Image: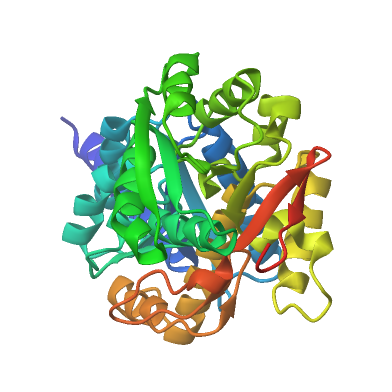
Length: 393
């Protein structure tokens, strides 16, 4: 090799090293100027009615936050994966967010099953995780790094039985889905029913792929003394149950659904059979019907208008859970004046008086939800729309 060739190669190697070093510095500077947040959602698949509005909401409001200057001058970089409702995929994506994407926090988990699969990953990594799923087992017992925004299945049972007691009913039947949420809510309802003087006198279940629940409902119809029926479940199952309920002429017996169907799509799927169905849900579904002095009115009406104007779709409480989770996290980062996961976790737990679409949130070391029963509104379907049930009726 000539000396000239050697020099040229040395220069080339040096230039390459300098370029790589410059790229590394640029990449490092870019990373420091952004906040990387992770999200694993069921955007497609059987739980897409949850994940799709959550995905749309997060992207819409991250853009809004970034356009306004970000968080303390740093732009949010949102990394989203679609688990299709599969718990194994969710756990794989959670691991990728931690190990490859290096996120500082996680907001997502559309279902109880996917959330429970991801919890160990974020707990071990000590990264705050705000779930959008319903079951109380997500935050009870309390896990240090895990929080959630939706009302729990236990709260749904309590709100339903509170209304049943007000109507002076004591004998109730249940028909429950066998999915993670349906099973969990069934168990919670069985636990709290005696507190309201309610006896469960008949019980049936159905699977996530069942397309007709007439046989189970026929048994409930034949059970003596049933005064009301409760359906713990989510997805299309409750709409099928509701249609079968009407087909069997059971509509004169009060029928309750859970907040797992708190979107207009339930009414559309159930059709006229939904008339008279009651369920506990967030104020978001009746935003325009809230009194002007309601502390949530401004938040829920603005979110509803923004979501519907942007997506051209009806608002659902599920997108609202994502809105709440994102802003609880952003507020925590601002108070912490840091994106350090441990400092952010501490500030999420210190959240007080946050007015969201789901209610007014005040968390503590023993409460990683921060909502009480007053955050739930009892709704009834009338003329194909949600209406507020007045207290005591």
